[in-house]
Structures are given as C-alpha cells and as structure tokens.
Length: 170
Image (cartoon, rainbow, N blue to C red; front, side, top):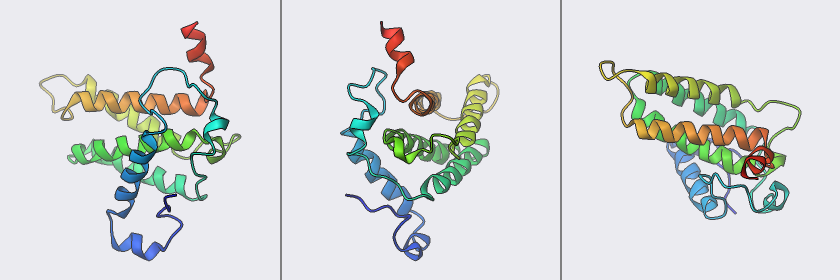
C-alpha cells in the first residue's frame, strides 16, 4: 500500500515541492488499473465493493488537495496555464478515485474541494468561449478533457451509484 505524503514526515514534503506531485502521479497510475476514471459506462460494482481496494485517507488530505486545486485555478487564470492544466487534471483524477470509497467523503457535508471544482469549470468554460482573436488557453482539447473529468467527479460525488446514468441507459 502506498503511504500518503500527508501522514508521513511533513518536513520531507516541505523540502521537496515535487513530492506531492510524484505521489499523486504514482497513486493515480496504480489505481487507474483498477478503476477506469475516464469511463462513462455504469459501474459494474457498487462503491461499497470498491472500498476495500481504495485506501481511507487521513482527515486533512482533502483540504490540502483543495488548496492545490485552488492554485491550479489561479495558474489557469494567469500565464502558467499549461502547468495548471496538468496538475488540475491529475488532482481531478485522484479525487475521482478517492470518491469511490464513500468513507473518504462526509455524507452530510459538501466536500471542501467542490467550490474549487466549480471555479475550475468556470475558468475552463470561459477560456473555451474565447474567440480566436483573444488569447485562449493552449490545447483546447486538454481543457475539454479537464472539463469532462471534473463533471465526472461531480457525478461520482452526487450520484455515486450512477442511478441517473443507468436510467438513461435503460
């Protein structure tokens, strides 16, 4: 099992600013084998059945990731758009995986990262709406991909059993 950078020695993670990035990348790569984060097909298993495969996070992780997502939104708003896009996509994929274990998300409280996801969607949508004469974000396909993953995250949070998707499928 992978050790979260949030629960280990905080001094090490402060010394290496890329430690969180490396850990997130390793986590997403390892769990993408189990959970297809990009699939729009209804889940074959219930979220409770996946909980054993997905670790329970320490309490402060979602707050830390919310702050990271906020920084990504800020980068998208300024000239560091490329770095912000990649980091935001990685964070969204991580959150999709983590949300498959329903114990990681408090049922009665909106997760702290939801306002950041909404801000991310707003920035990305406004960038896509810019005309060719305006300076838009590079690689609009990456922006569209990020929007799709962010919307998929919202579905995972607010309809974890994919009732609506199953209804539409018939």
